Image (cartoon, rainbow, N blue to C red; front, side, top):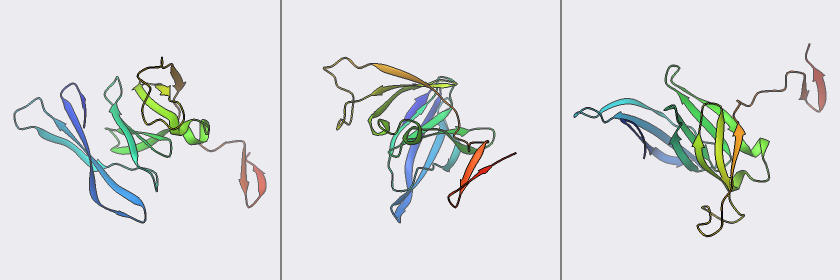
Length: 154
């Protein structure tokens, strides 16, 4: 469960795992009124063979999730769809399993890089936070490799 202002989001299993992939959903509830109206109830994708390690709201109220394969996704309320915002495994391969997200802002992520083999930041040692810019992973528009051949797009 995560909260933001008068919204409560609950991530839950929608069914049993199939071929080592989980079926997750997220329900966003407006708890400002007495009837606690469900605003959104949609699928919540995660990478195959992974687990969800974090879910939260950004400072602006957008829902984000992070899975054990290092993929950070955001949900668009207007388009009713999820978008990959940052692939830590692709961009920061050596540390993606050591990321503890502290906050998400409009264009950047604040996180703690944990020591190897830790599930949570150390309470004793001083943790340093890092900021990285968010961008959706896209194909390189200049070149593409298909069947071992490099193609130049013009």
